[in-house]
Image (cartoon, rainbow, N blue to C red):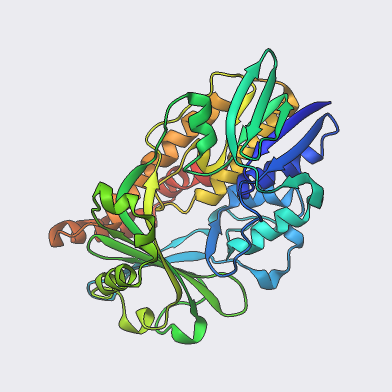
Length: 383
C-alpha cells in the first residue's frame, strides 16, 4: 500500500482525499496548517458543469437542493447606463444530473470534510522541510514531528510555503492590480434584477457579480476594482482589515454600483487579487501540485473552484492508470483558461466610451453565436 500525504485541507486537497479513499492501494492523510477547516458561512462560489460531474461521482447530488442554486443564464448589464446588454445561456452544457451550480463555499467544504473520517485530517501541521530520500519523501513539521510518504500532494493555496520549500526558492504570486470586495446580500434588498440567475455588471475599471447561493434568499456579491498598490501596502496584511481602507474601497465602487445594493451589503471583506505567473513543475516525479498551489487564475471566468476539483481528479486518474500524463495535459488546459480569464478581465473593465460601445455590440453578437459559445465556453465546461 502506497502512502499519500496531502498538504492543505482546501477544496482540492479534500476532494482528492475523497477519491484516494476509494482505492485500497493508497493510505491517505491530510495535513492542515490551521487548527480547523474553514467552515465560515456566507461567501459563494460558482461550479460549472465540468466540476459538478466530478463531484457527483462522490455523491454531491445528494446535498440538499435548498443549499444549491441552478442558474440558467448570466445577465450582463452596463453600470454606466444601467441597461441590460444581453444574456448568456450557461445551461446549454447542462444535463439532467449535472448543472451549473452556485452555492456557499461552506456547503462544498462541509460536504467534502464530512465524507472523510475525522482522524484522516491532522491539524496544526505547518511544513518546514521536505526531503527526498531515495524513493521516499520525508516531510517535517513545525512541531518537530515528521512523516514519510511515497507521494506528496501539495494543496496549500496560492501562497504555498511547501511549493517554495521543494523549489528551494521563494515562489510568490503576482498582484493583479485589483482589489476584490466580497459580501453577502439578502434577496429582499435586491431590486430590478433577475433573482433567478447570475447578474454581471460591467463598469469603468470595475465589474461586479451578484448571484444566489441557495434557495433561502441569500446572494453573493463580488466586485473587482482595478487598483494599484505599492509594495509597502501589499506587505501590510492588516491594511485589508482596516475599516478606513475598506470604507475607501466601498466609496470607490459606490460611484458606479447601485447605492441600494452597496448600502445593504453585509459581512464585507476586501482582498488583494493575486495570480500565478508561471506553472512550476516539481523535479521529484512523486510530488504534485494541485489547486491554487498549482496555478491561480484571474477571477473573471469563475473557474477557481472548478479547476481545483478538475486538477485533483486528473491527478487521481493518473494514479489509477499509473501514467505520467497529468502535468502535460494540465499545463495545456491551464494556459488556455488563463488566457481566456485575462481576456475577460480586459473586456469587463474597458473605460473608453467608444471601446465600450464596440464591446457591447460584440458581446451581443457573440453570446448568440453557437459556434463561438461552444468554443469559448465548451472547451472549459466539457472536461
